[in-house]
Length: 255
Image (tube, rainbow, N blue to C red; front, top):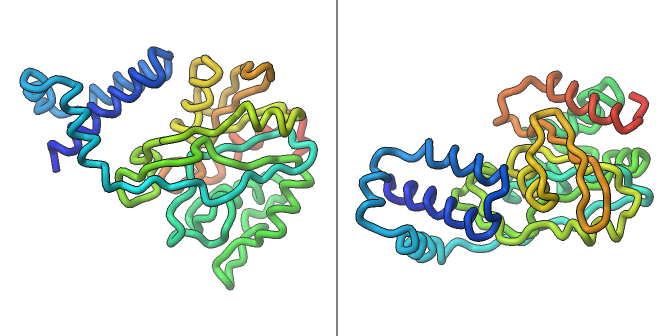
């Protein structure tokens, strides 16, 4: 198991170098990956080349299925904001067939808290599910579009963690801008999702809660990096809500 983890780490560096080159985000990620590898790696690298290790990794993951995104984009007329996560969890964790479907994800509680001062606005506690039609009506009224940064992924572990998602195919951001020319901002939740868009726009990843001006495919937009709404991210719901509230106010929302 230890060798598998080491090989996976090395393969991740290999993919970064060959698919994203040396963008500031990827270089930072490589340092983080290398720093986290155990000393066994440095013994191993003297015996086996990176390419051989990568081939071993590919053989190991041949049986891992590729998952396609289960939901179509939600694109209301006149959308101003495109909110992007990375990829939905497995269906056995869903409370509804829509974005942020996990009962333990805080996104819809955050939206209820900042727009209605009611964190349970979109949650049906009796049925332990979300009020999907109310969520869609809210998003349409506020001109908020939803999708994720990955169209297709492999799960390197049987969980919902971004850390163990290999993105096979990214979002076609150019097509989104063509379909929704009114988009002013792309809002990403989590480091992985932010890194994908920052790499596309060739900008540095903004700090948590901050924004950078971008241009991609002839479309100018603001890229906001927001806290992950996952409970795994160690920040109180109220603090997450403060960051999202600040972002919406910067975009002219009256909340």
